[in-house]
Each structure stands twice: as structure tokens, then as C-alpha cells.
Length: 309
Image (cartoon, rainbow, N blue to C red; front, side):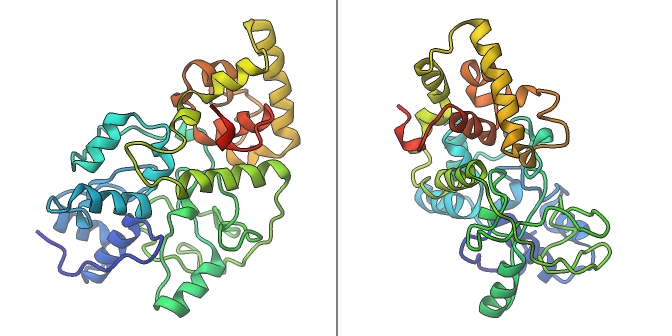
């Protein structure tokens, strides 16, 4: 059964945001029931699902690969992750071979503070309501490398309600962002946050991964995000377990000194989790989150991801 009205996507809007608005406009009070009615199943509209069966609303089989790529690049997180995804997964997305069960999860998603939840900028909400008549969930606000809004970089992207601690993990619970908590209705005020040098670099480089992903089959930074860490570590003469262990200790203290714990679940850095393991970054680079990799690059003195060969 088809959804009777499919809203047009706004600039930078996540496709799942459009799906949530479509379910809301379908007229059913319970979006869980609406999804089951129109899709035949109920799957959470969660940000860590890079490819979601509900995206078929906007990417029917009739679309060409070029049209499908445009939607994936501009209205999903695939562009951001394409630099490190396996080629066959990108091809599967472009060729409409989508399966919620077989798509890879974001590496160590449970340890990442921002990869499991939907975030928004309160200033963008107000501006979007004035310009478009409604607010929506933007792709750029869902990057786990970002702490603040890309459009208003001085304002933090709220990750929970300050009053009750509620978070949004499923857009069926909160289809349209607003400046009130959907659970306790507390007002979410804009919060100013000042970056340090490290968080500023990580956020801007993460946005670079998102914005420069024009061709999903040949992403610009594929070498850097798949193999580059081993090359950078080698240039710093990190050979052997003793040197790796010493560098790991220095990295641990550097992360805490630069407040990088903001990106991770509590105690992830203190417990020296594998998501931040130098040896794993060198040998199994694809199995660490992009934010860990970018922090590793920055620690080793990389000035720009463009310089990694």
C-alpha cells in the first residue's frame, strides 16, 4: 500500500525525516500503526541505519542510478560513510538492493554519543519554520563528528532534554523537531559552545567528508579513510608493540586533555575501548568509527585530510 502523500524533501533534509512527515500527514494518530499499514512492517526510523527500507518512498525502482545517488548524497548519511564503506555496499544502495538486516552498522555505534540519536539546532528550527512553514531533521546535524550546528557553529546540537534526559532515537516518536521536549515539554534553549582546536578540526573534517561525497563509487577520501592511518603511523615510525603502547598512552591523555570524551559514551576513553585502539586503526581501519580515525589523524599532526596519501 502506498502512502497517499509524499512530501517534498527540503534542502539537506534526511530522507527518514521526510518519511516521518509523510506518516504524520497520512492522518493516523499512531505513527507505528501508520508505518505498519503502509510498509507492512515496523522498523525504527533511526539515524544509525545508513540505508533504510523506508527510503524506498523517495527511491522507487524506477529511479536511475544518477537520481538515486543524488538522493543518497544529499539526503542520507551514506555520503559521509562512503569513504570507508565497502564498494559492494555502495553499489547495492545505488542498485536498489536494500535490506535492513544486512546493512553494516556504524562501527562501535554503542560507544558513540551522537550516532544513536537524532539532533537538531534550535535556531535552525525557528528559521526553517519561518522559511518553509515547518522544521525538519537535517543530515548534517546527525554527524557523530559534529558537536555544534554547521550553519550556526556557536550553538550546540542538543542531544537530550536538560529537564528529563529524554533523547530521540526513533522519528516516529518525534517526527518534527521543535524547541520543546516531546516527553516533558520543557523548552530547549539554544546553548552556546566554544570549540577547542581539536573539536573544531574534527567537526570541519567530518563536514568535509559529507559535503565532498559527490560520486559514491569513487569517494574522494577513500584512501585516507580506508588505509591512510597505517601510512601516517609509519611516517611517525610507529613500529612494534612498545612504540604503539607508548603512543597509545600519549593518545589517551591527549584525548582527555582536549575534551574528546564529548564524542563517546561515558568512560569509553577511560576504559581505553577498542574504538580508540591505535593497532586496530592501523590493521582494521574500517572497523573503527570515523570520529576515532579523525582524532587519531589530528593527534599525529595531520593538518588536512587532503594531505594523506
